[in-house]
Length: 395
Image (cartoon, rainbow, N blue to C red; front, top):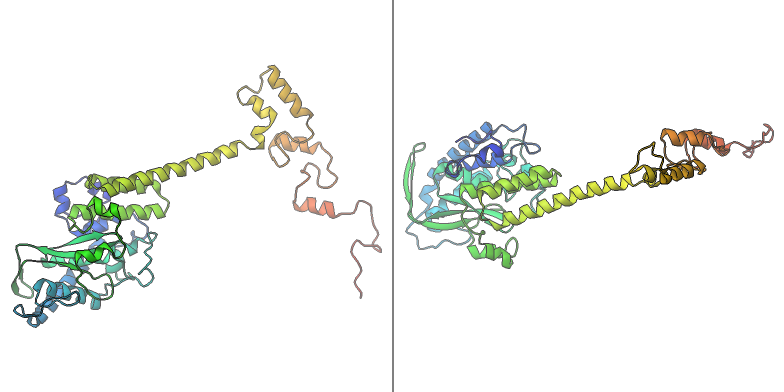
């Protein structure tokens, strides 16, 4: 199934089985569709580059496979693969991608990801030749996309504020590569692989309970963390990242729509239900602020004028006592009916009939236009050139 050029609204109509068989890189690019900066990205070119990286990893693994001794007594540690063939495969996968292919953190976003820059959250910021790097939201996706091309049984794993990937296989995996030729059986193993920092590490599940953010009771209760994500769940995660990008851009409708699509894929995830309700409430609050601003504009001095109040529910030709008194009060008032600063035709006509010795005729007493300022600076009595308004210069 090709999703590289589909919008999420079209991809969401596919069955869960079709999404489960999709390339995770295509799912990621599909979620980034129509985000700022994604228009000039060639998805076909990016996916072909991932294929090239996978071939490069195969070559390096075949070159260095002799280094692994499965009968060694040295057990694996957090920072070494020991006698584990699965860790050896992941070690060289990350080493080639980081050192030879340029997969790395964005130097300016390492500890401060910015949702206003989708290239920091989706893989095109890493795989594209003009990309400057990614974050923990995009680097593990690149690792999994390349590993899937090699036949590794890996999947994304989510913890609080972080993504990593896991090799998980309880039956063993048979690798049968053609170019270069390699047939290898990898014993059952389960290992967390951390490649989003500097270097490579294999941390246990307990490590991610307190890093990079300490869990609270709700994080442990919903049970969504530290689970190997399926393609459907990973796509929902990408759609939530898409929603946060729209949220930072102030596009409320697209933000809420993306969260709704994520909820449709994983209806039993309480986190997305809570986020959906939160964004809807914030959207309604934003709309209410606009309505309140319009009301304040309508309740300007013009609307509070007695004549306008009288005519608010009556017609302009109404002859009831209330309307006649309002018109009489407005006509006898010395100031314009809508205030000193109103520029409507009626106010300008009333103002033009009022003497204004301090400024131009027809302008309000507080007008600061160039003509009124010059008029106020002029002396009230004519003066001769021998007695100027300004003091003479000493020369």
